[in-house]
Length: 159
Image: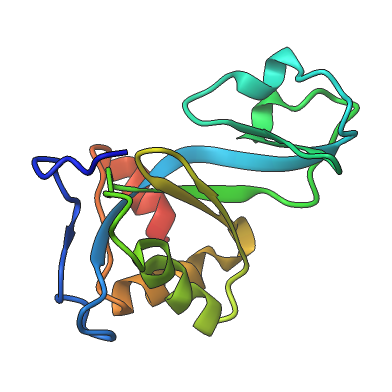
């Protein structure tokens, strides 16, 4: 793929207070709880798995992994825990290195488990609900900015 020099870039190079030279990112919280489910690798992708603002279906020789809104899960399935989903504000050119690392490193350094998914344009990072307070603090300290069109969802996130 040829890099588009006119592609908008959603970070400010060198403005990260903890790690100069690493991107300071903007991210959004996708409302609602998410579930992560592992199914048999030969299973048919269920219709409920692809509904909602964000979902991800990945098939390997070992598994079929599904990430979707927790409310989509049928009664006979459950997820070990509920997750909060953060969407990094991309797109990011493929030549840009360290984007995902700059976001997840402060989480890792503060003991916050994550589940990351990359798409063509951006990255999504899921954090277990019970770690939200620590995640918000770690990301803010690292200079990343939560942006929201919905003040109510932001208020609920930081409470």
